Image 1 (cartoon, one colour):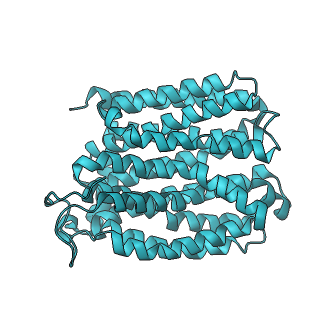
Image 2: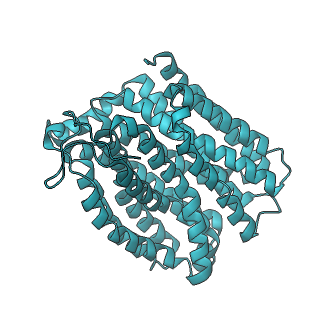
Image 3: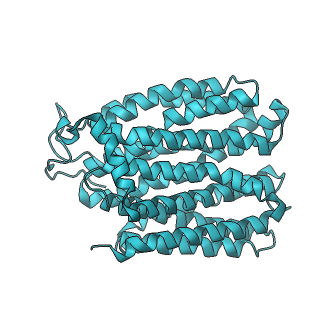
Amino acid sequence: MSHPTSALDHTTGSGTPGRPPGWAPAARTTALLTTLGMLMVGQMYTVLALLHPMATEFGTTPGQVTWTATAFGFAYAAGFLFAGPLCDRYGPRAVISVGLAAATVPTAAVSAVSDLPTAIVLRSLQGLTAATFAPAALSYVVRHIAPRHRGTSLTCVTSGMLAAAVVVQVGAQAVAAGIGWRAVFWISAVLMALNLFPVRRVLRPTPRGGTDGGLLQAFAAMPRLLRQPRLGALCLSTVALMTAFVALYTAVAIAGPPAVTGNSTAILALRASALPALIAVPLLVPVLGRLPAPLRAALAFTLASLTVATGSFLGGHTALLALALLLFVAAVAVAAPAVVETINANAPQARGAAVALYGCSMFIGASLGPQLAGALTGLGFDGILLVIAGVLLLGASLILPAMRHHSP
């Protein structure tokens, strides 16, 4: 991506001292936010790769350890509700900086925990502080990246957040196998602290002119947005999308087919099989962008549902399951930014609050995913996949009102 030079309008702000006025540098900004997205959002998924070693050390079952993921996710969702209005008031860069600093403490503390209840409490604090990143990052892209690069940047950032489910699990599994599961958390804490420097150097502050009205007014925008039926339906569709996404990865870990369950190499291969999709989808933005965002989201939900349903009939063949997972993740990577675009179109005057509602919905779904998979283990892996396919179809139906009211 080239360095855009078009002038800012009043909604985006001007350059910082020592920099020419204009839009933020798209390539550097996108690379930083995408990398940070994998680190911060990835904290949700670290424990999915650590269920067995953590359960062994705590003297419990992997199913019980999934509560560390659920506790993180619910706290993360709650944190979004505060982070969005804070972005509208103080600007995304300030929120990202404070959030990174705050998240390092509970992240490091998890590495020293000695029992499951304490781990659940610390993971809740970790989720609450890490929640500042995603709404601030998405808000920054909308405010500071030139329109001609914004679609690609948004897709890269959201794909990075989805890639976290794969990349961070693969990395966590490798680190745990080498130096233990506790190292995953202190390494994460160090990376958070180190990234404060590029955040302050690359990202630009948002001028106060875009945040008039006070913090209370920024929070007041959220209930007004929720009273919009289409926006409420879009948030529920996001819950469905992320419930399905995390439930599928949890099911692979705790209820996978015989060829996979207990085979760390096979599980690692399945997790890594989705990476090409997360690389390819951002490259397809010029083609995908020809479709209206609501239609793109609905089609992606439907494709994801069909792929998961097909996976339930593959008889546990690892190679075919890897292909199904690849297509499923590609569909999710298309759906997520399309839903963000649609939500932004429905709330142009309160983008931070709207993105916060999207993120809250996203991580309510991510929190429900492990519990859904755990509750359905009696159905077996194939049965879980069929339920997930149904959840995705429900999500597709919730996008239909936005399609009917979409303006080109």
